[in-house]
Length: 242
Length: 315
Image 1 (cartoon, one colour):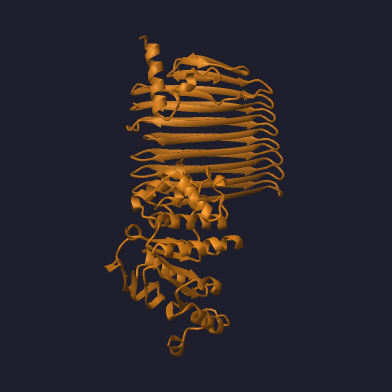
Image 2: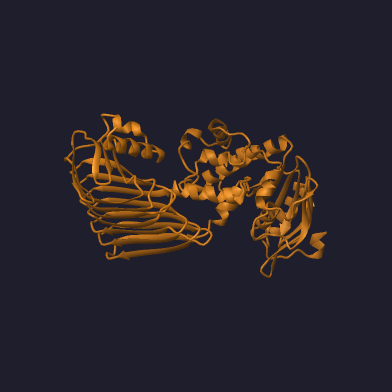
């Protein structure tokens, strides 16, 4: 499905992503755990093809195709999408239309079903816009409903649980499992070790390095032991990286 | 068919093209007024609404009065237009909204064939105590850009009155637009002014909206949304002055430019009482990158995403 080879990204003089390589298989949930500033969101933007996050070196291979130079919309049309950590607001764009932006199927009934899946009461959102009148949590759920509606082959979810109420956390987990259920892959970016438990495999990210890849349990144990006492200040040593 | 009937039919056809519903002109519950150049070519009134039009060589003097404690239930439709390629239309409007009365005006200004048309509006409006006045002006222009639209209004709100103005020029070429609205708000009154315009070619857009929060606890918001592309230019001057104790105001301006468009925003906020507060936000420049990329991450091409963002903003 996805193969990342030696990806490097510099912003200004700062190395944000440092020689990252990993693979994600079809139907796999791949967690990326790390503290704030580790480079997780930058990695997600680079994978999605965001302007300003073009890799300086390395390759992104998706289903056998080198997509490193492809634009964001071209990647999206190949089946990759990103649930933004802080999704943009839009004046004059209805929530129901927003949900189905990337969906091959149209119809407000369908959009409402996706909202309901994210524990939003559709009748409350029928005439509303995806604008700044939505709370952070509401906007986030609309974003996730939109990702689900697209039925992506690869969903990059950047902190999908942040800002979402406790009762809806289950809906987020359900969404991730649903994508896996139809054979789609998920890159799950989080700083919460509880969330990463849903992953099949996970990587630990620190200072731009994805330096440990393993089972979620292994990664969580390492994270608890090494990262929490020293968030982001500790650059992984050669020993750490083994 | 007489010239009069033909003009009326053509105005209604143009009105329909501008997304208006011509059925409103045959509904007895809905008041309307159709003015072509300097002639009233259709009108219907409802109880509590007095309209006195007086034709002048270059337009119409129009007096609108809503009697006290009268609620005009359905929006009143005004249709102003000049159908030929050239012409001048001067509207002098004087309106008084009685105490505890309410009216919603929907004005459609139609200049579909304009090559050299001037539409000048001078309005003086008084909204009396606890009155409600909503003025919504939508323009429909052709693609030649030969229209000069100059609406000017001075509006006074008495205690507890509510004013809403919505100006929209997003269909067809703007030509030259020069809006100048000034509102003086009394105690506990509320002002909401919104202007939206989309300029291209060599269109020139100037929007000046001024709100003086004179009365105690008066509130006002000035919102403008403008997009310009090709060689069009825009300038938005939003002025909010708070004199009244506990008065509150906000200026919200977004201007998007593409290609060789030029945009200028001048927010002027002033406070003259220690308990008053005025805020402003202005975003001016190209399309917001986060918005653009959010849409592109759903598969929209860049041009489609820009179009959707601008259309949404101007909706």
